Every structure is written in structure tokens, then in C-alpha cells.
Length: 476
Image (cartoon, rainbow, N blue to C red; front, top):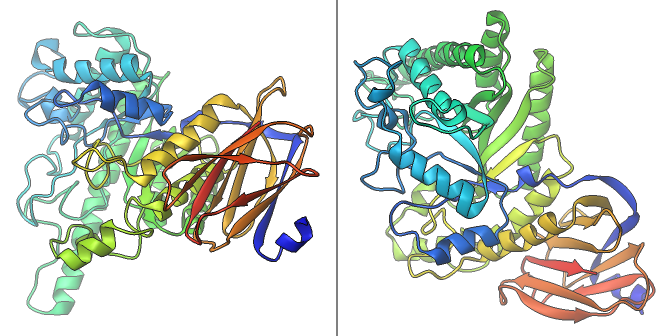
């Protein structure tokens, strides 16, 4: 019977008798967190149900209107004052958010030092202008860490481990901005291009100096924390080369480098991880951790189309299997989370941070996106089964198998991302015959439906409801 199905099905294998490592929950983290305004208990419960390990604080000022939250100029609003005087800081709103994150969600904190993104136009910038006094900003960062880790300024002893210097300084006109804009000017296309390149190099050189200044200052007072960054827009090897070279020359080592990745191609993310590891090793930073702290499915549309008011564009971007938060997005997410577990990556933070909207887990009417159910499915596996077992997938089908240390419970996730298969045949070793088996199917038609299975001769057949992407969680 099974052999006749092979033609119709992808064939994958799992061996629960072979342990290959431990689950790493820190690779299942996000920017999702509580809000000061409009964060009912149902939203807290929804975030908890996705099973994240940690929350990153970037852009939290944008989702907490009229509140002084997280960004350095909110925490220290008057730049002419003494950064060593605790009376000059405003910690209250950020204290409240971080306390809720720790106590209500149970998440670790990954603190982004710097500013949220500012989409204010090519030459209108307020919070993202390149700071005039790098040493002063470094002192403000130090005061922030001192407050949360050493009780300073009526603070806490939370031992927040990861502190990130800035975010996307390689972005244009939104994160690390020249006073007259980042785009080139001139009377000919050649002049405009040359001026743009010159401005870009100037911005990069200034940021490299800023980064080294902050890194040295923070590590001198807080040798027990991990400091790094700078959350580049991509794994920009040229930019990272300049940054790591400057660190090497200054005699200071970043504890981690971080970047972002928005794509629909899993191979691009995995290749970037390998490239980052080789780059850090080449400069002698073999202990430097690798962190992707913004990542999300990005389909066959542009950033402009994602924000388009055109109804036809909106229909393509926001409805159907290939939509921004649809089943392709969800299965891409589950597949990447599975691949991360056996990669050289140290942490990963799914974006976004808002509960609703483009980068949330539900729309404005509180309808859950497909990706919410996918994140919840993965969270169940990673938080219940700590030991990873050997598995083998195909080009389009990803498998992550795990069990408890006492071998009493086992389970796996199988994800078909755009493979088009009708069935997935799973060959299993290490599971006793005669067990009752239940699986949960996640596809375009069903968010998360429970289905019965039969294990026959060490083989399972997972039937998809259509040829779109789909994922299955199977627990023994």
C-alpha cells in the first residue's frame, strides 16, 4: 500500500533513536509585547500562546502612542543635561512595559538601544538624525543599563543580557540620517549617483565610529552583559566588514552581530547565516553570536505594493495563499524556525511588534492571521519536547522531530512550503506500534484542525486538503 503512495507523496524520515542536539527556545522569539494602551488580556494570552522565549524592544515607541518608551531620547529627553544624574532620566513608561513583558508574558528582554524607525520623508528628521555627541549617547546607554541591571535611579536588578546598539543604520532616510538627507543631489544622473555613494560612505564611517565608541564604553562598565548590533537591513557583508575591522583595530570584540531578512526564499536566509559565521571567524571573532532579529515572509510584491491603496494590489497582497500573512507566509515561518534549530544562528526574532496590522498576528477586527496559528503550532513543539532527533526532509518539505529526555513523549512538525504535494509520507523509527496518534493540520482551508492518524509498519501518511502549503504537528 505504502509503495503505491510514493509516487503521489513527498517521502521524509524520522529516527527517534538518534539524538542530534537540544532545542534552542531563543530561536523562537519576537518583537511582540504588551502595550500601555489597548492591550486587553486576550492579546496577552494570544502572545503567550505562541510560545516565544524573548521580546525585542525595537519600535515599541511607535505602538505606544503619547508614551516615552524605550528610545534613548524618550528616556533622556534633554540632551544638554548631565547623563550621570538619575534625575534627568524618564524611566517610568519603559519600566512598566518591561515589567509586564517579564511578569505577564514570561519573556526575556532583548533591549535595542537607540531609536525607532522614522518615516518622515527624505529631509525631515527629528529622532533619527546622526547624534552630534557620540560620547554623550554612550553615557545615556550606560545609564539605561545601570538602571535595569544594577538598581540605579530607583531601578532593578533584572540582569538583562542582550543590549543592541541602534537599528538599521544602513537604511536610507529613516534610521541614521544626515541633516540634508541621505539621497544624492546633482545636476546629472552621474552626479546624483556619485553624491549618493559619498553620503552613504560618510554615514557608514560615522556609524562605525559611533558603534565602537558605544561598544567600548558599555563593555568597560558592564563586562557581564552582551553588547552588539547593529541590526543591519540585511546581512550586508561590506558594511559588516568595515564594522568588524574597526572593532579589531580598537581592540574590542562585539558579543554578537545582528541583521534583518525579509524574503520568500529560505535558502537566502540560510546562506546569509553561513556567510555571517565565516565573516566573524575571519576577523577572529569566533565567539561572536549571530542574531537575526527581524525576519518575516515577503512575497512577490514590493514594499510600495504592501502599502498600496489600490484595491487590486491590496487583494493580491492581502488575500489568498501567497498573501503577506497567509498560508505560504505561515509555512515559510514554520520551515525557517525548524531550520534555525540546527543552524549556526544563535537567536532569531520574528517581526513584528504590533498586535494588529501588517506586522501583527491579527487584523484590526481581531481576526487571527494564518501565521498566528503557525507560530502557535511551532511553540507547542519547542516548549514541550527539548531533545532534537534525526530527521530528513526534501527540497520543499522541512521536518523537525523531538522528544522528552525520558523518551516518554515524542513529536514532530512537517512543513510543505510551496511544494505542491498532495500527501507527505513519513517513515518513523523509534515509535512503538499500536499507539493512538493525533495530528493537527494547518493549511489554507483550516487554521488548525485535529485529525486522526494510523501508524502502519512504521509509516504515516499526512493528507493535505489541497496543493497549497501546509504543516502538520504530530504528537505521540
